[in-house]
Image (cartoon, rainbow, N blue to C red):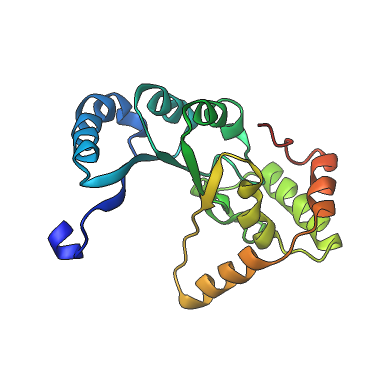
Length: 199
């Protein structure tokens, strides 16, 4: 791989989607990656996960440099900060947040929108629309707030967006670069629609 990539070392190797097989990842995958890290073949080890419980186990049981958690720290779901982010802070493990649109509902909260890869409930759609309206009062698109929200937590170092086209990529860049005043986040916190950032 190093020869084909024409590089001396790989920056990060993620153990991907081990949510249902975290025990195997800890006992089988991690020791090999840890040895490669010790040799300098890879610079960092991470896990890419969808759920908090196995991610917490991963952070506690392995010496990880970074984790990627999808959909668990968004405008609709802040569950990652309850325990996972606290463990990451303790272990000095950086976090990348993916799934910032929760499968689409936070890109366009309309009837039929998806949440966690299935059609969203009416209750979730209503909540997403309330968030969208609050942001609209400040002339901020919900997509911009969705991309920037995770970075408010001190353990989060990056967000990961999925772009199918160059147009979507460019839109993500515009949203990422958009200035969102502190007053917007304060209004969101005060609204009770999201849980306050804990650190």
